[in-house]
Image (cartoon, rainbow, N blue to C red; front, top):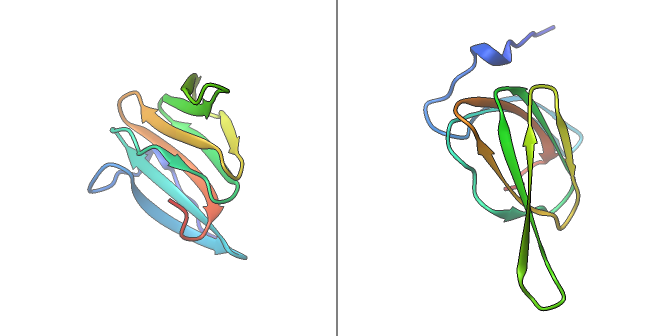
Length: 108
């Protein structure tokens, strides 16, 4: 058995990750960051769990006129986000944060 203390993990750069395991085509990764990720569109489902810190999760949709609509949600320790295939989002840590991400291997 292996145990991990998320609040003791840090990486060499923003969004550096500790690969924990792969489960039948899914990756389970512990991320550390103090900078925003990039806007991206999911190519499958994703589970995003805030383990330490605060993350401002921004999602965007396109309205009938073709304009982007941005929604924001503050995620705190223990909050879980389930992003679905096609969802567009970006995570903005508020200072240092640690996140557990479970998604298809090779996803952005």
